[in-house]
Amino acid sequence: MGASLAERFSAMDVEHHWLPGQRLADWRTGEPAPRRGSTHCSAFLAAACERIGVDMLHPHEHGEKFLATAQAEWLQREGPEHGWTPVASPFLAQDLANQGQVVVILFPSPDPARSGHAALVRASGKSREALAEEGPQIIQAGAENATSTTVKEGFRHHRGAWVSAQDYKVLFFTHSISL
Image (tube, rainbow, N blue to C red; front, side, top):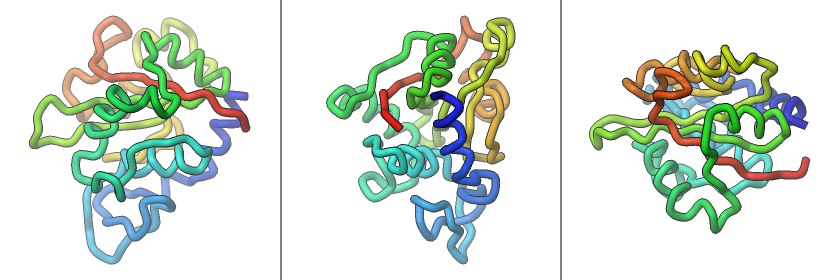
């Protein structure tokens, strides 16, 4: 089940859409607009959730600027009304993604002048030791788009977001689905 969801997210071709430095013509598809822009992690997250029928705060409701932090706040405040549940640990987050649940990971920026970051946890057979060091496996748009990378690598531009499984400032949420 987790592999099926990972396949659906991979089909979104994040490495060629929601590209950093390009404005988006459409947040749902990641198609670039003619003018340059910033990164699009939260638009990608919203588009992925929409494609599988899961509610997520999206650019038309908030705008793209600082959307990842707004999504984290929305998930904490309104997420339960929309089927989202907080996840207590990175180990559980990876387990839930492996079982086919939608699992999102967000870093709400502590600095109101800087953006946060958002990604999706994808299925992975990594060991507990690897999970403890580098975090769950994720798919993301951002400064570098990646179909599969680690939390440690993907969130490295956000100080303190991930140090280890015992020292992190990211938030995990899950939403059950049926494919």
